[in-house]
Image (cartoon, rainbow, N blue to C red):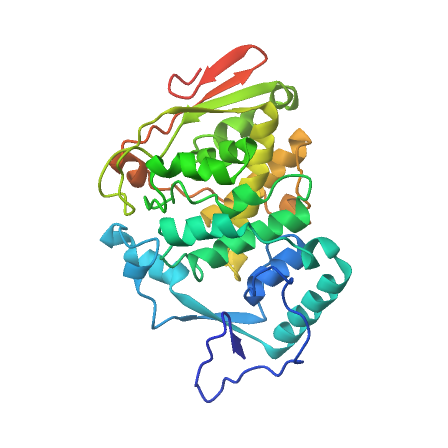
Length: 356
């Protein structure tokens, strides 16, 4: 059995799966990912691996080194149960995923010839920002590279740079890898259109995961969805905030996405949520907020005719089974972020604060 991430156990009943050496497992300029992420890119969807993988507690999980380091102590058991785990894979799963990875790299030039982000951008991230934190699964860069490669391969008509930088202006747990004062420097390294999505992403993530926006969009008719002209909302980051989000507040500067940007942006979030869907036992985890969001966004984008990413997922079979489980708004309240928006449709404006 192989432990995801390349860390191998010493339990007598476990052994490293035999593999074929020398077969390509990553694009020339890409990232060597774990088995779960590789197969999700190959299949263009999240996957329930029940029956071929099992979870065990990770004895080395240290919440103080992760994006959850400032979580409410009462939430720690849930965080450890959800994220403080190791995945153990069957030999057959390892062999299958490695074989499929090599085959796709040979056949799909978009993935095989993937271009890495610019060296100057990488230097900015690694030398001038603070990404020295473990993500929910692996390092921060593991997560960013997964989102970047999934987007590059399956949404090639739109820039993948926002997917690589989606967390740079704020993480869901009030970590801020860069400071607002560094925005002019970042703007020199990306296009103006990419900057719109990068700045919007942390705010939109909270509007989505707290179900502030999805609940309204689900109620709209197809004609109303087609009439959406603009989304107005607020920026998460603020001036003089420290990297841990313990100093400073959101400035709630007004942001907006026009019609096309709005739908592209929701596709980015669909990709992003796939990296948090449970690796197994979906039937027992129907309250997973990330599984719910994948199903809800996929349903919405299909209904609106705005699914720009290749996404071979049968959300129809899950839509009546997944359940939204209330997501804590405490992180937003702590930094004074306004979980509000205005949706311009057909010349009218829906105000989430007024409910009309």
